[in-house]
Length: 180
Image (tube, rainbow, N blue to C red; front, side):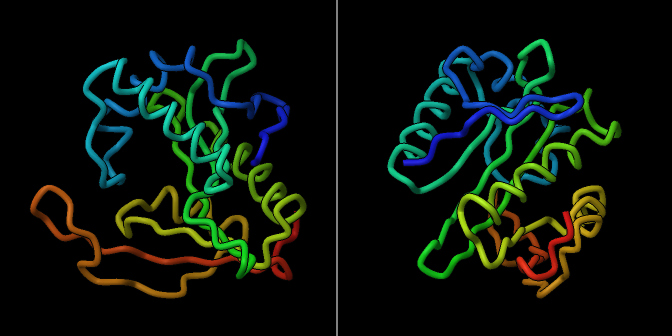
């Protein structure tokens, strides 16, 4: 079981995801613009958002993922971040993050990701952190490059979603390359 001890930054709080976040989580996961590069169905109700939060909290309790709510200093959820597809026997995990559209372009993604990466290397003892990104998501690629992630592969038409195939760019950051 992983607990996400709150992490405070200059402008954010990374904390445990809660059922009370369902309305803000729904706003994030139902936004076609915020979900543009996330090949998953849009959330259709606050109830569905509650179910997704419950599933993530259960997976975290089972040690399968680590997830944080990215909250502003008023404790309102503005995004999520965490580790998915964890393979701790190989000391690696896939990082993921997203912010609701009004919070893009302010450096908040970098601010949150810096702490998530630190947790992965220090607390989870990861050797490698990976990220799978839609190659059209240049903002996310730029953020990952800022932290030293290197492109390892481009998987062409690797993901089928809504009847369309999508490419996936795979990046990695080794603990020895991490400088923060």
